[in-house]
Image (cartoon, rainbow, N blue to C red; front, side):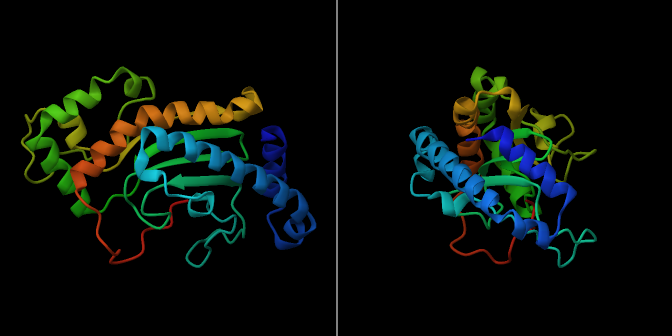
Length: 232
């Protein structure tokens, strides 16, 4: 897609974040959105080869709206200054393990994955899994492709949570309150035809991590009890 043009559009939107400007430039938005939809479709089709759980998704299931939810926000700017998508078998409106990417007004292309805002019960379930099956985490951390995309990152607790011994193996991972992985690059430094390749390479390397989180959590609930936090 025309990544330089997309970044320029998002920069202008950041400077003119109002409905009048957005409406006046709606044709540009629609054209860039169509190109982004094509990019998401290509990424989906190729990532599904490594992770068949996302094969049923369509781009429309993955792409976030440009409109911001401003109901509880101090910043009432109506539009996001990024194009973003999430690949999750259960759809956008979950906090289950997923792949995520965006292109923003700074030119950042971020390709990440994992769980950004897991609930306390989910964290406890992952910790029990790590303690019960440390060999699974050993194998994941020993994967050179996964290590090359950053391994496991995210915010951590300062002290071991309840049930976690202070001398437990994999203590750094047990302390996590987020389970994330990912890398970013200035999209303007990539050939436009190589953007999908860059994302797919990282998502493919993250696929064992996403599967590890799914196995740790077990089958997802049939129905979400409450809507997740609006992160993106």
